[in-house]
Length: 290
Image (cartoon, rainbow, N blue to C red; front, side):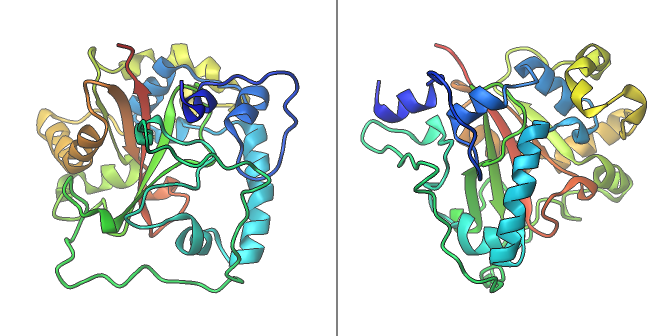
């Protein structure tokens, strides 16, 4: 087993003191154990209300404290992303939770400790998105050039099992676009967002099973009456929704080979977007056992 692979699969030995800033894998295991199983996570994604997906409440407090310092240094989270975290077209080598998808026998990511993970200050100077050429596509597709994309691991992952990778696909071109979303379903997409599954050998859990999974959300006080979701539409409407997410679906299938990975992906509706104006796709990926 390589050093990086060992880090990815390690369990904390002895006491692991909690730190500040983005957590390490050892800290997640020791202090923020998963509240959801993989099956429950897929149920939440397929429920129709993406607001069910949560970060551990104590980890959220740690994030909130970190964000105060980031806002003071960079002016905003968006400035931090644009000036430091997102490196368009390049491989993510800043994550403390590196993806096994990126590890090759001779091409291993640098494992950065919390003490070495320093932020290069830009003194709060904002930087706009890079100027886009005239031939830039109007919206995200499975063939969008890598220079318009930044694929990183979520530094602050949701409360998912440690073997589930939580990846963010940031894109300079929009995911929601009128050419993809028929007017008849636009209000539904605005409320619910988009989601899908790849590499699954059985259908994703039915939304009807959600009540049996809600106890996993007890820490957040979620009950069935608090859900925000649309009723299932007609066959035609459901097909239009599927088409609206087809480009994202094809992108995920291409990056996470269905022979090796099972994924649940989603794009938050505007009401749930943490960074409005900068499109991103969440991908939860589980490597299949061979």
